[in-house]
Each structure stands twice: as C-alpha cells, then as structure tokens.
Image (cartoon, rainbow, N blue to C red; front, side, top):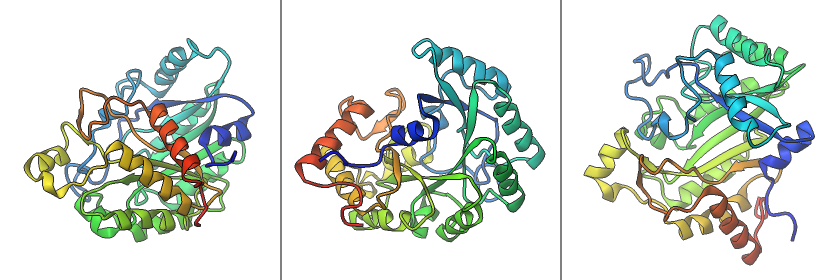
Length: 305
C-alpha cells in the first residue's frame, strides 16, 4: 500500500510548495526547573549539546545565528526558504518583551518564512498566545510543546515540574488561534511499561496537534539520568533497535491518522551517548526499517485508531 504514515516533509511541502529548512537558534533562555523557580537541575535526561548544531551559540545574536545557519545549509541546497527554529531550552521563558523582539528579529530576515518555537506547556500565557496569533495572520508560526509523557508519575520522576493536566490546558489555550501546534514525546522513560507507553498514542491523539516528534529514550553524558543509570541500571528497560522498530510500528496504528510524524528516533552524538547502542544506525536507516516492518506486518498510521 502507498500510505504508511503522514510524514512531516509532506506537511511542509503542502504548506510551502518546496523545500524548507529549519535553522536552530539559541536564545540563551533557561527553564523553570533549572533556575529554581520550580526546581533545580532540569529534566533528568536533558543535555542540550545532543541537539544543538555547531552554528548556534547564545553568545551570537539571532540575526548572526540565522546567517551562519543559512550559510551552512546553502552549501547543499541553493534555493530554499528557512524556518527560524527556537530550539534550546524553553523559548517562551523570559520577559515577554524580549521574547517578542527575538521572534520579530527572526521574521525580519528576508529568507525566513516562519517560526518554530519549542517550549514547555507551563511556560505560555494568554498575552503570548495572542501575540503569536497575530504573527500567524501573515507568517507560519508553529508552537511545539514538550509533552514527553502523559503520565504524571513519569513527569515527576524525570523532574519536569509540571503535570499532564497543565499540558492539556496549554493546548486548550493555544488551539484555534491560527498557530500550528506540535508535540514531542519520549518512549522508554523509566518506570513506564510497554502498555503505558502504547497508551501515550491514544492520549496524544486527543490533543489538537498537527505534528508529532517521537524518539526513543537515550542516556547521554552529563545528565542526572546518566548517574542514576550507572547506579541502578535495573530501573531502566531501554529499547533494542529491532524491538523499537516493532513497537513504533504498533504505536502509530493507534495515532490519529491526520497527525504528521516529524521523526521516529533521535541520534545523539557518539561521544555523548551512553545507551542504548544501536550499532551506529543513522536515523534514515531506522526509518527504512520501520517502513519495512509496516509493510510486512500490514500496518499503517491510524489502523487501530
């Protein structure tokens, strides 16, 4: 069959009619579970070095980061447009005027066609949503919430310092405002059974999201989770590659068919990755394994929705 799942590349092509590249930006903001307002140390799994490209730096202003990113990507693709991706830490967690200024600075670049903003569900408010809604009248604006888990016991264990009820409330506040909504979830967090993880697909599908990022739990260096994993490895049940391929193939059968899947896996830098070791398989190779499993097992996104 042709349809296996809704992929994010198709979503972007539908919106922009051609190739669009995200450029990751670092605002230098922090998070409420790092600065002491809600907690200390951040999420137990988090090391921002695992997904921050070399051209990003909080020491550079937004315009400079954009120029460096465009220079980096234009070597391979000469004709394309760009999305300013506010990625590192919590990109709505600062003085509202500063937040607005940085978003407007990014949109002022002639090659930037929109914003993608990564944040926590407990770090938005009505004023911010109204501002983004106004921007969305003339620009592409995407707001991605780190959901991570739909279970409060897990959110507490990984030091998120917010509840799933707050996640639902954030989406309620942001929906129907012209803003494209996305979610991010991690499969394999400690203490969750495979059945509980599968239930995430059902709960996530109830949220008013267009896009979804999924990835397997990875233990990376310089995190609280690395220390716990070294001390109590028996508390972790990390996915082996073939098991994950089978699991994710079943997982997406429970997803709402209209959700566009942005990714299935994450690939931390080799020098930072502690576990699991998937033998150096690249993200695109894992995706091909998933596609093959879907075809062979006659499964597709939404089959059991």
